[in-house]
Image: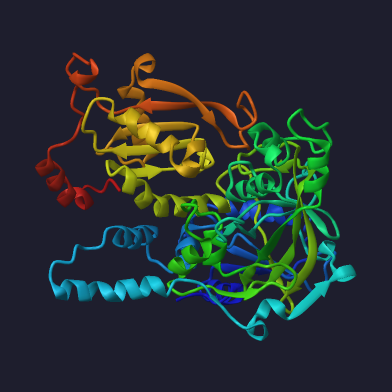
Length: 530
């Protein structure tokens, strides 16, 4: 079933025994985060796997009548419920069918493909009338705009302030008109402004740079563009190539932005999926839901927003305005320190009656985002295999915080094959941030970290099998030599071939005779061992 909105999703979790409603008074300042963190790390029970239940706080200190939902994606079972599948790999199979439809030979084969094509067409979002949009039940503009009335969480003691942590940030590409929905943390500065954590490699940051390029020809220098978007200083003197007049002119130019908080689970999840730039996240959400996302025109900006979201924030980013953002306790388990980022000015807030604020807390794994990352891993696999069919499976361990470690199993076909795969991954969209890649043979279960450790430790000669390269790294990488630029490591833990210069005999791995295993299986219960 496709959940129409967050409330249907909450009701489904409640019926499944996956939701705990907390009526005790709890503060959004640190306390909710601590409760959610402990919950996300609960071990498996007879009724539920690891990860603990979703949490609905109904007595929010300082915000009478407010409700806050946390840990909604915080277990494998709920991640599958959110996407309405029995297995996360089921989504991958649907993607494979779309990518590799059966070749029609007869007219009947062609007719059989028509329902699939019609179904794909039904995934495109549709715009509904304003009167039918629940997110328009309350509309606040001008002096009525007040972000401090939202129960925004401060999640760690050294955070620079309260942060909106589960937003769907909506922008439009000026050239193509394509909408982008991304998830970027937003530090609340005051009643009507927040930070906009657009890391420079993200789609929204590139849209901002495109607008800067269009604003003035003398902004063609990449250095100047970076200085004016992320990691630079807006108050610094203009460089030789950027005139004071240009800086003054672009400060008056704006990029419209809308933010949805509390959408149906597939729409929220689609905001973190590393999709190809030409595919809209609304279409991805429709594919995941198997039903189109309903949109409505925003009140003050030229954007379409999820019609049944709990909150919609509308406003703009000034092209050349930056402000210090952070620190922020991040999913790496460390604080991301202060840096300069664009500022989002809120011109309008619309919301449902008695809105439910959706939030998450990130920190030392495992946490809620680990399960979201595992779902991304399974969904992304067919797209990786589209360009590198030799890939059998991948694993992004939770402790590797998504971008620090990827384990890849391949069907090795030629000398240097593992290194080719490493290079391919580093050239593939957001996978370019992967700091360490370990490549193993196809008979290694990459989801079994004990098996991976055994293979890696035994199969490598470190000097021969570890390679280093330089390139872009995640903005959150505090260990890189420079912000956004550093080294990466690839480990070839496959069996070595003579064609790769290995002249010794490679030993077989230990495995018991199949007949003996079957015989012992038959007598195991009688042995009384356990």
